[in-house]
Image (tube, rainbow, N blue to C red; front, side, top):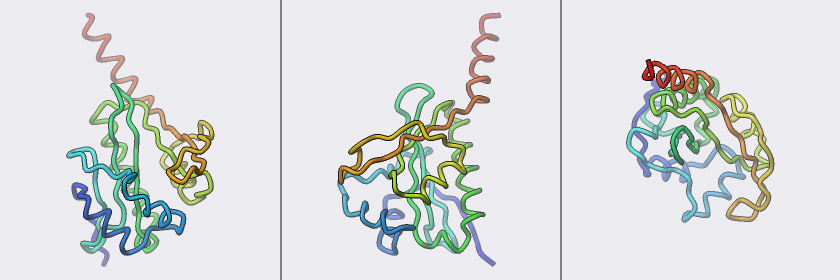
Length: 165
């Protein structure tokens, strides 16, 4: 029986996944740009999904300003063993992070030719907002994708209006 566990993210988790191999050859290429790694070990805002004590995927958010954050994910080839359960766990944890931190807009950049990443972002509820030309460290195009958490925004507006009473 597979044992899943979500733990706080550590940079070593990312290193382990890169060493084992990422979930697509495009990502293996991007991992060569070590100074531009997007994985941020911000306490309380990042996590790793372990499968039998091995990191299979990590992700998190980093706030840009009130209500808006950038999201990131890094996955190893191990994710393919349990991709559906892993995707659901990642989605749930990301939703929890956004709600707990009052994030109503979560955005991310996905390499324009990384079809698996685009489909995954869409599964998470992200919508394509357009192409960012020559955005990547290798001058490749990326898509700006974003998810609006209307229910978080609604809760914030209700709290604000209740304070006025």
